[in-house]
Length: 216
Image (cartoon, rainbow, N blue to C red; front, side, top):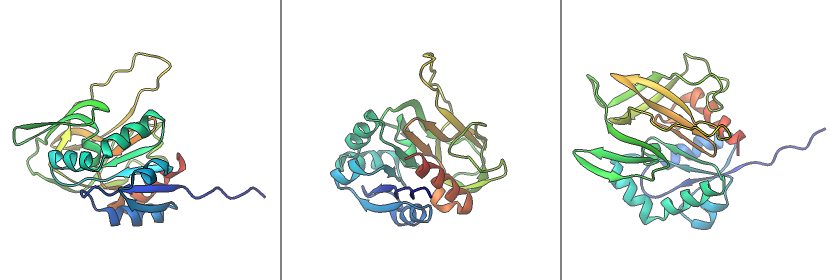
């Protein structure tokens, strides 16, 4: 009889932007031991760090910096420690965001600009399918018809990161379409992110969070 796997610990980073309670419940449902905190040591020591985000790109970035979240994310990733961003928590991982003509620097983990969606109806609010790579870990166990819940007016429309070193795995990029294609999720080693809200996406979102927890 094999020993049970230890429960993975996840910190939902509480920097004032994001529905942390919904994320907490969804992660607990997926089997994690979850704590909501902005405590530096707990955020660094957890098996996984989840960074939510709602509202304006610039406000989220300022809130993250005020809580030293930018430094925590950088330190965790430099040591190969898993981090996952959700919604604006994904957007701030890119190079910059432009809202109402104002440009704000992001964390620059990936090149790219968060820009207004060009669609007949904005915000993009509701359920949508995604186009994930065949070898995606995040969407393992989910079929092409799985639907996820989106609420956003801005997105990254172009993926420009090129990996030429054969030793380095290229990120897996998932797309969705609302008026035009946009980046819906990224898997890049220890760093995962989704534009949609897995914590509000029912069984499909629960499966994605379970897949993430299994990598911790």
